[in-house]
Structures are given as structure tokens and as C-alpha cells.
Image 1 (cartoon, rainbow, N blue to C red):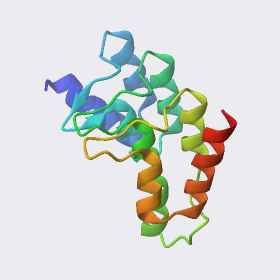
Image 2 (cartoon, rainbow, N blue to C red; image 1 turned 135 degrees about the vertical axis):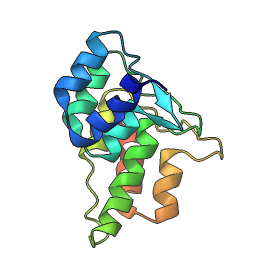
Image 3 (tube, rainbow, N blue to C red; image 1 turned 135 degrees about the horizontal axis):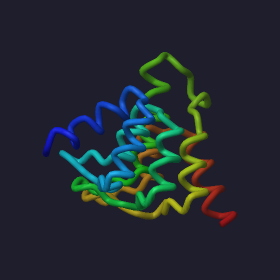
Length: 142
């Protein structure tokens, strides 16, 4: 990984939109991956919705599977539930905005990681009724 690619992950983490736009406009790979992290999963992990949108509008594949098989939707489900737990939130308080955004942009609920888990399976592992119901309802209404 070169210096520019290392810096893109740091820029995403801190919300440096200008750096992200420069990276993409100068030919940076919108699906770049390092150690199982893609630019999109990094943006989701750091809850940088504006960067998520920039990436998706600049050629990032919403269903790109990293080396561990996770897609952006896997990451969004995990961070929604785990982030709520880590900050002392209660079941039912999990945010769904990034999950819904990804689904509206074509994220596939049924893609499985290398262990055979879909984003719905992750929600079920956490027993997050809110996310389970949201994903099932979204899938049914599509």
C-alpha cells in the first residue's frame, strides 16, 4: 500500500471530504481494499454518511465483497447494532439511516460473507429485533 492509499483511510476516518474527492478525481480506486477494509466500509465504520454518498456517486460498488466477504451492508448492520451497544443504547435504538441508504442504492441483503452470513444473519446473531424486522420488511417490499 502506498502513502496515498494509507492516507485515504485516515482521511475517511476523520471526515476529510476534500482529500477523498481529490483521491477519486486523481484516479484512486473507489473499491480499494486493505486488510478486509474498503473505503466504503471505512466510511460506514466511522459514520461518515456524506463520504459514503461521495464514494457511491464515484463508482464504488455497493455490493463489493472484501476479502472477508463483507459488504458495506454487513458493516452497516454491525456498526448500527454494536455501536448502540457500546454507547449504552437500548434495543430498539439502533440507527437505520445508513442501512436504508445502502439498500436504496442497491445493496443486496442476501450476499453472504466467507462464513455464510448475510447482513440479516448478523442482525440475528445480535438478536436485534429492530434491524431484523427492518431488513425483512425491506426485502418483502422490494
